[in-house]
Image 1 (cartoon, rainbow, N blue to C red):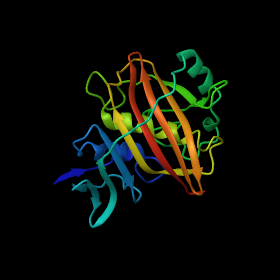
Image 2: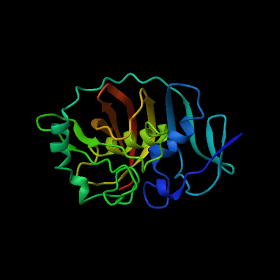
Image 3: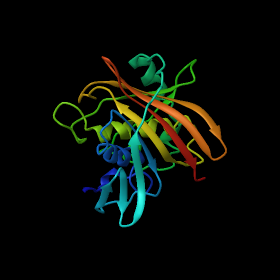
Length: 225
């Protein structure tokens, strides 16, 4: 049996783990290139949890479950870096962020990813630019897979709640990492909405580097607002 601990640095909403980061840690225990993670409870911080049979357990409580999956997701054409930068300059979440201390997209986090996107001109997708640095957990070449999962997670929430509210939390996340996200290299973050159904919203995201798609994901969001 393995254990997982989500350090307080990697928070999402206050007092709980970032959904993408936490899902990525659990996904590492599933022997598959594409993994689906369902977050069932808020992920506690700084607490050792057990991983057993694809489940993340806090004592007897199932926090999340993971299983191999397939991801049939076509990524739209990447905007140029200039187009993505222009889009991110319009980001509504910078001043109206529902969770401003989030590791993945909190505008005030100097030790986070700061994945803030804005709407592309003439397109339905949102975009931004991410240049990962060695302040993030890495292997000397690129960021660790759980950081890639976090960088896929937060962008996909932003087209779903374009003005920062109502707040959504991640329910189910299906992701695959296809090539390294290298340190010091500009990457385009791309996200787009797939639809809504009551309190649920559906979206997708991708990280695109100089050599193509580095990772892609599909998300189910649940409104808590």
